Length: 531
Image 1: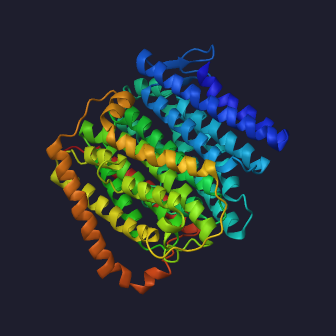
Image 2: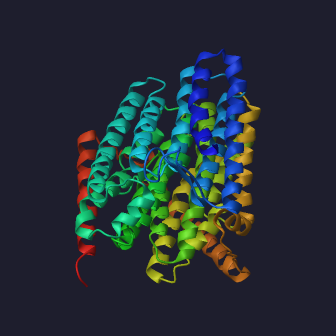
Image 3: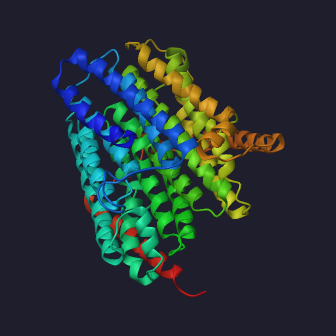
């Protein structure tokens, strides 16, 4: 029953949050998010020490709405429960927010839970479509012209991507007669690759769209970095919701990898996406757009890691999913405080944060150290594992990606220094508490990465002193080189002061989606050629 509880409770409670008086909804919301997080922790320990859970609702296998929770899903669920609780505390206490916002935000949690729990492709499709509507309305929530435009682009793009996914569902059902992951894996073993080719390509086009892989990534900055979207929405979209696409990528590759060997293609697609995201982030002056483009880059890095042949690198990618959720949510929430206090989103106009807003400054610093893979912070271990492929070309690609990330955040980190400014802003204990908690987790999951890996993924991995020292020296060298490169070259390019707009209209986004479909189709076809 816990699996149904995680979906039904947020959706039904959201109605009460909308109908009841404001003071009651604050306490009810607090209880709801605490309860959901508590259930996810209980579920994780039950799966971790007792095995996977399958709930069919009284229907035979492969029929009805069946829910499935293994160790991977339970980790994702716990991450969902924790981050929604953090964002609720950041947003709602002690301030009461709009009831429609609370309704949509709470429904979104239940729908994300359904995506991670369902093992039926059509149920996942429905959950993604409905959750996308919630996200679109939340993006447009302030009803500013730019936000409405960005929200509509997000909705249209999601509809386009999910149409590909729906076509894939139809084709795979025609060939295999089932939509359940387990049933599909069993049926695919008796089908030729040619029979499943189009179904696989359509499905993966929709998934790559959700993951914002190049060249299907142009929708993401508008959705995650739009000026009118509440900070909490941007944090959930970039830190958490984007992981639904990554989760589907993991599940579908597990089903179809015996039929289609696409690891090489998706590795290079991830590398290109990571590098493209970095280049576009470096060219921005808007702090939310910098973070949004880095979401593209980090997801590309994760997809590349998941597509390597080395199991340590794959587990490093899984760990980086958790790490990215923590430090990217932290950075977006801290950025929201800076934007409110300074009255600007321009990275060149925000200075002296460590002196003017020390709590927010420490949070930004922790997030930067996490995302760049600094020693002792969470990104250092996951990126170290990612580069343990024993392939010099692959390791070099990961090294270049991390150098680009450091370079971009040298620019971002300049906000921390400078003269103190007298700012007028309301200090909120709960928002400060959330930033401090996420900052400490970025440090703790780096210091105790070994126990975390053992607990979450049942993997024994430790970094030797010499290996960690080499990793630390590489990071320090990259950091110094990035500072030198920024001061001598990037800071002197006047065009970057005003930012470069890489956004596309819907027509061009549709063309990029078609190009992505053709790339996947071509790569899939080439993988089937003999030799």
